[in-house]
Length: 238
Image 1 (cartoon, helix red, strand yellow):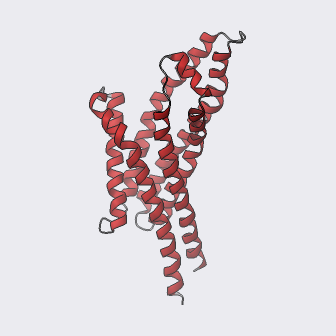
Image 2: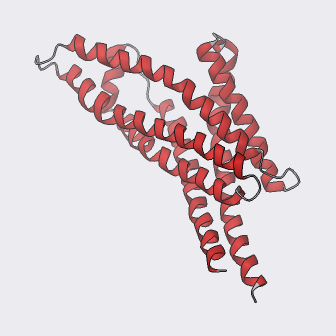
Image 3: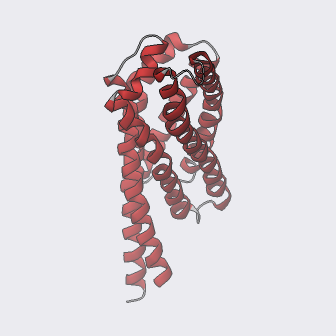
């Protein structure tokens, strides 16, 4: 009984993390709408824009809370499909650790050292050297998106495969899972297959809101599952 109650409490805590993940998703996708830069120098000066700067810290927190979301799904669904849920969590772990590494590098190296050095022009390292480093990093970042998107598709698809279609709340999560997977495929087509002309509107207007909704739904469901696990066990031992 005690173990089950502890699991219920864990699911509620992880559900709260998922809700925070929904908030960070919303902030990450909405913040770029409030700043714009044209040209390399203007893009470098964004480090002094408070909205841009705040978003970099949100991006550092975001992988942790969304990884806790994946852990919550693993614990809640493991009994339905041990292989699928374990694999899904491994893919989610790879995605979130990559995000965390990239976020750390951007915040403390690219922005904190290279961009500030480029703008300061202190003469110790030529500005062109900083520019070359920054451009090389963003070339590598573009390649990392492929890994992030593939890991997301696999983890989200496997978790969704363990949810029940005849349960209304779980059905909503399945639907938003499918939609976010399709939008992720659109991003891949736009970046790697030259299809951005028709994929961009879907991504621009749909990706942020639907992914936010998806994570909020998961958070609410995990909290509900946590309560159900604890209450059901208490009743069975009454």
